[in-house]
Amino acid sequence: MDCEGIVKAWLAEAFEKVVPGCGGGRIVPSKDPRFGDWQCNDAMGIAKRAGKNPRELAQAVIAAQPLPGLLEKAEVAGPGFINLKLSDAAVAKGVEALVSDETLGIPQREAHETVVIDYSSPNVAKPMHIGHIRSTVIGNAIDRILRALGYRVIADNHLGDWGTQFGILIMGYRHFLTDEERADLTVELLEKVYVRSYNETKNPENPTWIDRCREELVKLQSGDEANLAVWKRFIEISLKEFGRIYDRLGVKFDIYRGESYYQPMLAETVDMLREKGLATQSEGAWIVDMKDEGLDVAIVRKRDGGFNYTTTDIATVRSRVADFDPARIIYVTDERQQLHFRQFFRICEKLGLCGTAKLQHVWFGLMRLPDATFSTRQGNVIKLETLLNESAARARTIVDGNHPDWDETERAALAEAIGIGAIKYADLSHDPATMIVFTWERALALDGNSGPYLQYANARLNSLLAKYRAEVGRAPEENALAIASPVEKALALWLLQYPNTVQRAGDLCKPSVLADYLYQLSQLYSSFYQSSPVMKADPAVRDSRIRLCAAVSKVLRGGLDLLGIPTPERI
Ligand code: ARG
Image (cartoon, rainbow, N blue to C red):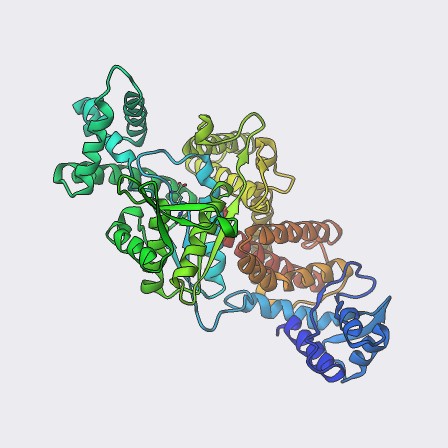
């Protein structure tokens, strides 16, 4: 039983009867439970447009047809609000139906449209730095949310695995590494020799270095076997290290199509631009001039004949549309790439490459520690792995303090789950477009808006449910739910908002919408729990309350799972 769906349908029909075609009937939770559970604010706007009195219109809507059984009361208040009060029995039935549904009531896309989501996408031979964490964490949460909504999602890791840096890197690899180091290659070593080789290109005492780097690049680009083998090795080593981090974060991609995958299509892409008269020549380079649209100039072929990031991204759209026919292609990167995305989106549009696909750039602000911004450009590189290790180590101190008696494996696993949960939630609980000031105290707090707090709430629910099963000898889900107090009703009504919330988080590509919801859920739960004893209550009350707890547990766990936050059994 979908309470909200029924009420919405009833309201929409009533609005249609009173003002045909007005489209009224949206509902929102009430600000104040004294006035009702939900409210509809549409009458005011519709009355204004129709030149009617808003209160009279609202009254007519309510009187247009009998109330559905699940509404106890519908009343007009103030300038024309429609306050709706649900019957306790209906809310209880709604919650029961929600949690017994396989998808927890989340509306499923019938058409299963495809969404390609391009996220994480780090650059080969460089350690993933903290700037990549937001793309990985936010992208993965959007990925999970869209899958839950019934989309066919293709998670694509668009690795930066091609470009001029490889000439410099090959030279560094050949000249600055010992045989042992080459045999035991790491990304860290690659980064080191890259920096050294890059510095050589600027060294006046070594004037030929830069030309030799270029030669190696040209050889690589023209298929030289030795250079291709080295390049493949760089990718293999990098993927091994990235994979280690993805495993820790619970992140999986469907495909890894790096920039190199699109190389064979680039010349053709520029030809298309030239044929359509979109690309023009300027100082030997080919550019698309969009200054008149406020989008500056995008270079699509450099003076030396090389292609670049923009050309690759245009080819990528063409290839994705041909291969997957997506309804949306979502890109998750930091805010500094906004112009790039606006430029190539516009170019794709002009070329008519998008098909039915909507291109969407989800950008996020940089993450700021109290003392510095994490950014390679500012030379203050804190590696993602270091951050995860630090978080797990701090969580370990907390776990050891609380459970010195637990065995080593469980403590280590729990510390890892809390450490990862803390980092992810700190990231996801903010609107992506805001700058995050990260503090360990806040991220790891067991009693604030943090990942560990929600994990802890979930674990406590587990132990309460286990206790019930042990003492009563029955599964909490076998009981019927009866709403008996305002706190219970508030909690139950909030549970009914879950499907909507997931829908909104997916539509807006904002996992923070879901994070806020879960935090609010755990707060409502905690005020319920503080005022309403469960195991100590009379059996009938106890049985209904534990049923409510089981419902909260299910939704909380489902929601944390959509955010990619681990839910340890006990904490
Ligand atoms: N490799 C790029 C970086 O690290 C991100 C790529 C994002 N995706 C894309 N299709 N441009 O900044």
